[in-house]
Length: 124
Image (cartoon, rainbow, N blue to C red):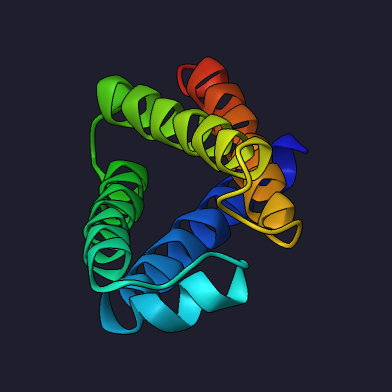
């Protein structure tokens, strides 16, 4: 995996940014896609979440291309992904999101684990 690790982290970061931008631009569409009720309030707050997803994806890309190791940025990006996995899972448990949201939770869980692995291998 080490051979492809940078490419995987780049792809995850770009996917995070793209999905975040989509949430900002069309929060109601994304909410419908994951089986949530769309209101003005839910769409507004979902767009805010999308903004932070975009920022953390960008942070991780910047950390990857930095001349110096950016351990805190990688750690906090990993924690964001793990937190998102938990939040989506709880949303499913409470009936806020449909089962399709499970793919989002699994992707975020996988991403958080990959980011932690990347952090562990940064100095090697």
